[in-house]
Image (cartoon, rainbow over all chains, first blue to last red; front, side):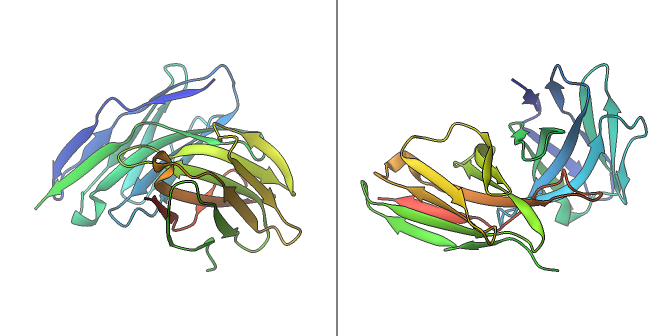
Length: 115
Length: 115
């Protein structure tokens, strides 16, 4: 079974600074997808960024980028120019490439942004 | 853009009662997923349906059942409710193909409280 681990229960960053959230996963498969979801106090699950395992290039979405190290099974999220609205719980998630297969989430990292 | 619709948004039940949660996926999405998120926890996968057939099954209690209908909406039926069933229940949907077929789009959730 696949597992996802986020070793940082809490992180904090100053507004306008950069922060990196860590995620590692375990799988025996070669084709899969990785995601970062954001869950603000409203509890809505919001997709931040995704990475296809077959792509070597790291995904970027505006101020959000990932460092995907397939051999090390590591998938970290970097948030640049942090904003107050970035404060939320961040979940790393793994999905097999099969249609209809589940997301397996890590335990989450609570990010605080200090003004 | 249309989003996933879940109803009701809030539900209060007594122990041993029955609850039915409904999910209406984004138009042209044929896959539906159900997740349960307890307080302070990451979302846990329950079950998914692809083209009205069960496609993946997680740690869903035998007291729970679900199905997907011909119009692709899905219902999660929960019987003999227990205090531990109090949680936020998410439905997510994904499309049959295209660039985002492996992404799951989450609804706002149904908050179930069992007294």
